[in-house]
Length: 148
Image (tube, rainbow, N blue to C red; front, side):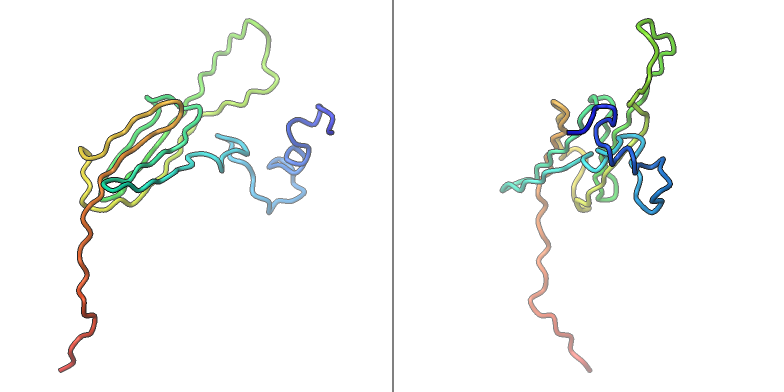
């Protein structure tokens, strides 16, 4: 067991971004800390008529999330603001781990999908999207080219 004075993880604090011992080590994202790699994890399910996406957005509210469909790319963006209230009546902060910033992720869904065809629902920190399947173009059977 580690003493509690070292924080959550002794080695993350010791060899973190502020440490110059190993400058080649990747630092943590100041917006989401060392848990940034867990942001916007997405599950994609295929049904007979659609594709269903479940995107994890913990800590975000519905009005902080936007979905855009342009040129065949579905882009999910989330923006978080930091409310800095300088008048703290209960005491002064020693450490505050909330930051402001944005994150986004894009998926190519094809040119035939229209925004009106996509349904979206945000519930319990999970964005649920449903996109219809588009008919696949038939490729020609023969791939040989005649030489004259």
